[in-house]
Length: 416
Image (tube, rainbow, N blue to C red; front, side, top):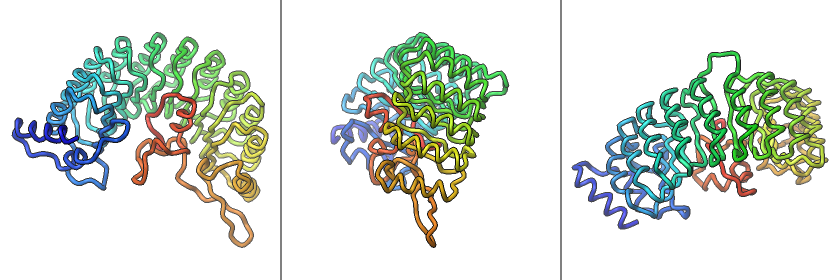
């Protein structure tokens, strides 16, 4: 670290710029055990300004050739297309960098193109996160084309990047032949068609892809028709472990299709249906599938689905029958007192740990209620804890996936 700090200061003298105090503070500390360098712009415990393009020039020159740095976290800074050129240079020259997080910077299409081209020959990077950068359709097409050439990248997050139908379809087509990507987040594209082309192409991809383990399709305006197409493919897919369909237009019919998948294909372990509208009937369908002895579902999120007493109690009964389901998130539904009592007993018995759900029971005047707690599948998608590493969180999808030695995240709880 001392050599790295001296190198950083010498480069600043070379380019005749004052050093960034935030970077100096980080370099004074030890690199984390996994070799990652955290330079997030939203860390209120650090001093100094957010990183700019000029800072990236110095940082890239400093890190080129340094084999100790395995991960670089640059979330919430002010990196634009100009700074992306320096990031691309670092990617192209690095032989050790394995993860790069550029979430919520100001990179647009031209910057994404430079980053994509730099990865054509890169043999080390395994995780790339572009979340929240408005790279648009043009930039996303460049990243999709890159996946036809790059043979090492395992996780890519292009959610909230203003993708259009063309680029989402391009990713689906590329993943038919890509045998390395195991996790992709393509949530919240800008779609204007009602024909659900993106869902159809993703379904076609799932039929032939045998390596993808995690798929995020939140905010795709997906209806029950689209879910039906997706489920037809999932019945033939044995590799997918984590399916995220939050914030779509899925009702009880879509939930019924998903329950059939759970009955026939036990490979699915994490299912996120938060902010849909499956209601009681949909909850009962899913509960029936969970009760089956061969069900391997470990985590289910059904927050804000207009589920009432009948549906929520069916989940409660399913958890008593099948011990595999350990995480369930139900806040935002109709939590009547019988439901509160049932889940309170489930928690007090130890069957459901408090850190594995998003509700906590309390009692007032001999009546049981449930309060919301900030747990969720995607708890650490947009933020990380100040008192510990988010990768240690037992209530995140990441921890669940890692328990089976699977790759993951592209972070939750934003939505984590």
